Image (cartoon, rainbow, N blue to C red):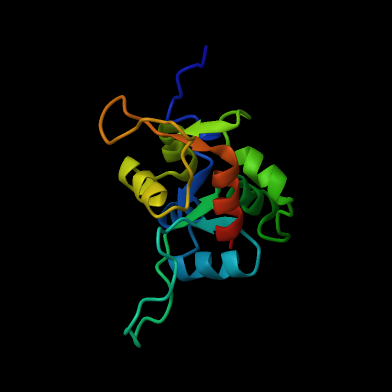
Length: 162
């Protein structure tokens, strides 16, 4: 029997938004977070549905970004005073993102894992970025959670790691 997930439990909130990093690191702003992600001082992901550059926008040629930062990397940064990066292979990073090691993850578990809402998970499925288990009957609404192939979630995160 699967236990109840307490949303305040850090094991099931493995990532935080960039603004939350600023709250945890007082002398850091959003630009600093972007820089720390780019130079590997923090581990993060862009979980945006469409991460391609926007068409026709010369003032903002960057792709849409919905950044999530691994809490463990923020804790490491705090503990070392930013003196060295947390180096982890993707397999260990992925394990930190998961509530279990089953071959299937529910959309509710994905919400906790990526720190996003149900609509975002559904949009990732509709965009073909996450694959549902064949034969799964799901829809929006209470009790209609999708079952997603764990391998597709791993591939998505690996492709979106910054």
